[in-house]
Image (cartoon, rainbow, N blue to C red):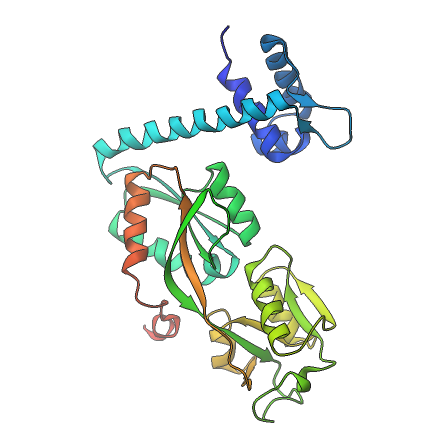
Length: 307
């Protein structure tokens, strides 16, 4: 019996994407073509791999087992490529790195720019998403190394702390709480809060911090990503806890104001994350070393002030 690796690859995407349509979009194929390839794989193995009896597809026991082996097969193929690339060093190659939304927006571009200055022959690509999306990208192998807020609890990932980040409470200029001294939980009663979307590590920190201040289940507005969150605060949709690095420009120009709090916010760790069983390519190893060198966040104000 010969196993068609192309069909196996398609089948694995169907399982990971939890549907034929989503897999087709990911693979740039038509949905009927994806369905047909999986069905032909089932016919060649003479087993049913996917339960199609409900609206949401799920693998059979045989399908789960095959998907597990398929993941190992393609991960081994990635490792083979990495091993071959070791011979050519860092003269050529490709680097795909990721970042959770805040880290990917305000930290990762500077790191990638420095990496490109050191290794101009390496083609670099950046993927940014919230912690939930970034975890899936790492597990699927689409991203080799990521810089993320917090430390993902997924056991298949390994993380190491590299930097810290602190949240600040921000408001639009002229807000009634601006200038009234340290803000307490009681003072926030009834205030609308702008929260990041579910799946974001920032959202978890926001809710934990507010709960610690005695502000449970406040009226809130959800905002996808830090840029949208900042805009919501600026136009008066509420107050927000957000990374000090995400609002550095707005605080400097006065577009937003930071409200001192009676209870300080706890710093959160910034982690370098990769899949535990992944053999890193030379480019990925070099990027890891670059991140480990960092003693602080980039000084954007200094860069913008230079001619």
